[in-house]
Amino acid sequence: MRGFVVCAASWFGTGFFPVASGTVGTLGAIPLYLVLAQLPLWLYLTTLVPFFFLASWVSGAAEREFGEKDSGKIVIDEVIGFLITMAGVSADWRSIVIGFLLFRFFDIVKVPPARYFDQQVKNGYGVVLDDVVAGLYACAALHVILRFL
Image 1 (cartoon, rainbow, N blue to C red):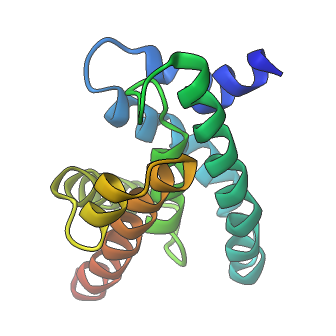
Image 2 (image 1 turned 135 degrees about the vertical axis):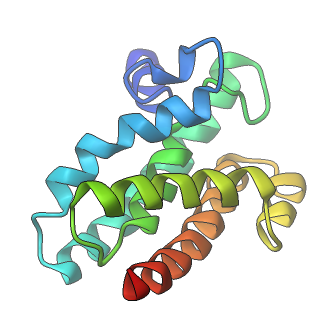
């Protein structure tokens, strides 16, 4: 189980990148997005629900494994945040690049209530929920931007 937790939390090792592990973890989410983007939107969104619970559980277990709260090695939260960002968007390079940049912006800035979840919720859900909020903001912004491009 330890191996699964470390592999999933670090998103196949991308979380161990020495610099900007969250950015590298988000890049690592792109292949999963490209697979899920083939699904009908209702199934894409439905898939995010169990993935959220898996990411929250894995993040909590990884905090205990790494002995750190919200360790930089944990990037599965960036994965779900990026998947939320890309909901309902075509899988073309322009959408992926803009979605990536928007998600990273909102994840770093932590617009409320993301900052609350990041600072006040102290378990796997806290690790993931700030990225869920960032993903929702980025998704809304992405849809607006793509409408005008």
